[in-house]
Amino acid sequence: MRIVETLFINSTGDINKLPEASYPEIAFAGRSNVGKSSLLNALANRKGLFKVSSTPGRTRTIVHVQARLDNEETFYLVDLPGYGYAKVSRDAKAAWAEFMHTYLQDRPTLHLVVILVDIRRGPENEELELIEFLQEAEVPALLVATKLDRVPNSKQQSVLNKLKKDTGINVIGTSATDKKGIDDLLKTILYHCHLN
Ligand SMILES: Nc1nc2c(ncn2[C@@H]2O[C@H](COP(=O)(O)OP(=O)(O)O)[C@@H](O)[C@H]2O)c(=O)[nH]1
Ligand SMILES: [Mg+2]
Image 1 (cartoon, rainbow, N blue to C red):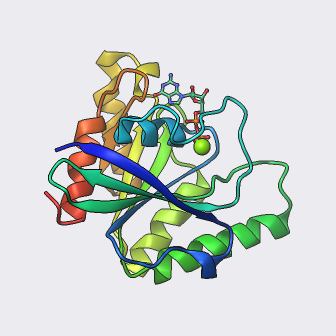
Image 2 (cartoon, rainbow, N blue to C red):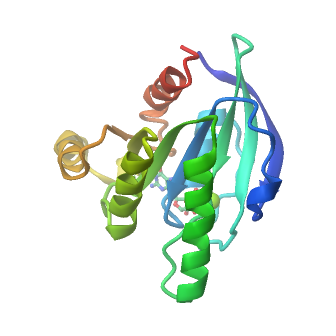
């Protein structure tokens, strides 16, 4: 199965302006610069759908992209706002958390949250807190270790195993650069959306 068409639907910082909850959706969360846009582009087989940048952006919006599979099924890929800037005020951090938490808790069509961590960095407090939050809200979570190409082949499996042990949730390693793990991730997503 693969994604054959994608369509930008909506970008908003206002929880009341999200698109109607009409398709199963998969949300992607991670600190800025983790490789979220690159991964989403690789998943969607599109180069410029999500903007890739070497300097962390500060967009505070939830972006909905509609994706259509080769079997005509449709779902939403959801890009959640990045976090983890040292320079952001406490008020801004609290506002971000509230926006995210409301979406994660109340979205009836949310099937899975993919939490991205840089494979060289692993989870920090924000990611561990998010995992705990999702467990309490009973929303399934998956850890994706990005930039797999930055770790030698011989070490990848043991690093992934350790991440799984440290977080208690399933882990997939991916590289947007050499497209490793992308098919595996899509399969897991479709399984959670009951589209497999
Ligand atoms: N080596 C490597 N670099 C990556 C990969 N994915 C993203 N990057 C780089 O990481 C930086 C941030 O990527 P981006 O997709 O914009 O991350 P975002 O801020 O999380 O959306 C860019 O310089 C990308 O080229 C990857 O799989 N491997
Ligand atoms: Mg991005």
